Length: 124
Image (cartoon, rainbow, N blue to C red):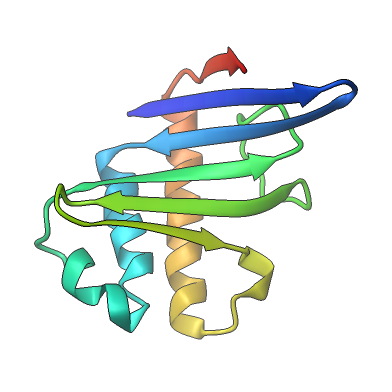
């Protein structure tokens, strides 16, 4: 499990990228990406690979992770060694019930991983 927070600052403005990576996150990233028909061949249940979620936020703290208006975009990444997928997700724009269920599972998993891990902080 790995939780990394990176601060990007320019004068008084700071943006944070909180990156979360683990086996369970990979499972739920694949589950969400599988809701897109064109990703199903790459992200099926048995496909090996690694998944990562990056939360773009104006909040410097990733723990405790609470879903709020400070979270802009989730960036999902999955790679199986041959192919990789990068998908930006704006949670408020999700309409499909299957996608909503998958993203809620992913967000719950992120909360649990953050609780169990000590975030590493990097200033860029």
